[in-house]
Length: 227
Image 1 (cartoon, one colour):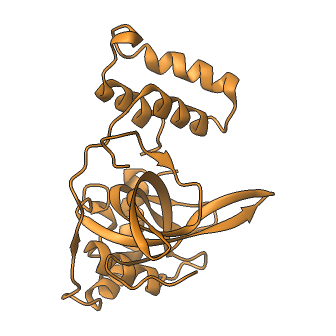
Image 2: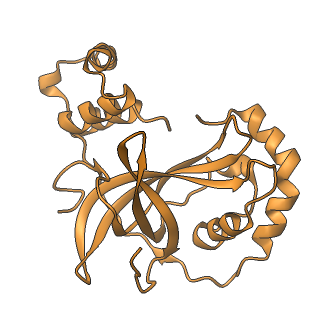
């Protein structure tokens, strides 16, 4: 299925996928590490050697600064090569990475007895597959001062001739089920809290639910996503 047939579902399995960024932002963690967090739309999955259409989404926290305060050279280079990032943290959120299609290696990790599906690596779109809280403006500017020159220097060493795969144009459709799923995830699957939050968000659209369009439902869904 494609994005015109049903709303996006969160990734629920490991595998090799194709997709592109939808949004991205900078996040600083309490440990001192810094990541560029990317929300991906996934439209293809490798199934027994054949690419098949899917309609999924996932998030990736790509750490560019380690806990010890040093740049993660490997990841900085990957982000530069795959998305054209120049190392400037202050422009991450405003940059247009939507047309930068990539291949994602997603693997299952166990955390507190729960399975989580994480992006292990970002590969070129046409690579032969193999098995296997948002920072505010002041924080970003502080990070620019501290790490900006190092990150830009690393990005400048990345290949300037890396081929860019163009992402297909898709229309992401919203509906009540996808919006409610996003609400549950935002409230840690607590139905009681989710119900309260749901009513508040629904009240922001001045018309009866029965008349909501796909755009209205997408607006509700996006309001439960951190960026």
